[in-house]
Length: 121
Image 1 (cartoon, rainbow, N blue to C red):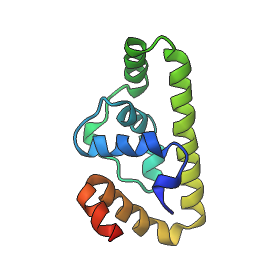
Image 2: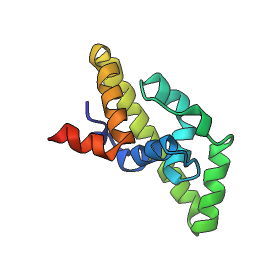
Image 3: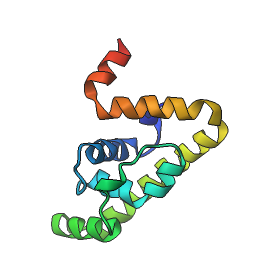
């Protein structure tokens, strides 16, 4: 399974990278914090020490400051997050013997762009 192919990956994966680098208030990082339990149960390594306490409220407040359509965009982001989680859970459910190793490898490459380039060559 390639995490980049999951729906919503374009928002969620940068959020994972942000959390691993200590940034907790990006839109992606807040979305990951909202679904941290689901994502962890599906096999992803979520750094718990960087999670915001009330990510839903923090995300919505940020969107209100940045956009006039905060409510619509917030719901669209949650739908993308849910799609990512559903696809990850289905993938994890149907391939449990391979997923733990595969997800760990992909998470390492998310943390380090250099590792990702090495893996491709």
